[in-house]
Length: 131
Image (spheres, rainbow, N blue to C red):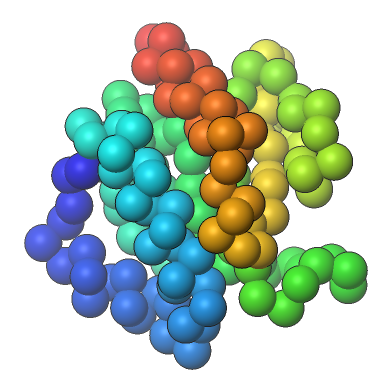
């Protein structure tokens, strides 16, 4: 993956005080790096963004946490041409016609399964197809 010069420092700053979430992120990053080695990662103030030609996914610490969400989790944002028809999708929004932002909770490393990775592959393909 293409990482900025300050990626490690930025990552540690983003996850300061959230060691469990950092471990989850690292597990996710390892899987994404093996699936999409040519992608780029950018640590931003509110999320960590994954790009091919365009943004296809992001990981973030939940800001507006719903009361039934676990205390330690990551919010994975997946850009697709459709809403996810799954109970794992905790929020679905269509910001533009035919473009859906789906949010999935990542609570344990076991959640990085074939279903999630399939959605991320679909998001990768969708982002690549955009003009």
